[in-house]
Length: 172
Image (cartoon, rainbow, N blue to C red; front, side):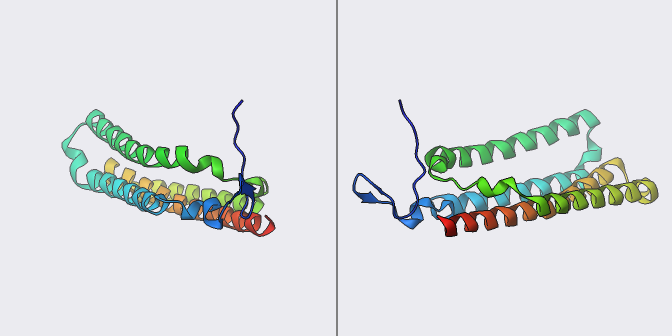
């Protein structure tokens, strides 16, 4: 039978003491460049899609544009999956501390308000302004507004995760 154990700093296994860096995912080798690559891929993809929709999409029919959009998503997912799968396989079993994720009330409230704000923006945009723009430009506006929503929601969850991680680290 094979199993995994989560070790805390200072614990000893076979006379080897686990250092603090070994239990901190932010300090694992390769983490920083994967985060940088992820940010680059996401913003590069968004820039590609927005530029494509504004300047090149009208030269193609709807089905060709859908195909290009899907291929761009698959390329981005492939790049990120290749980079993060190797890290996850190597380091994921070392880290615990997700108990604090069970009580994210403030984060849920912020995400709900942000989602409702996005819906209100979208309704106002579609009702008053959308007819002045092409379908592709409206799609670019929707994607850009989703980017803002994602930034707000993602930031809220990141803060929640960091607070939970730091709280877990202090009590460990």
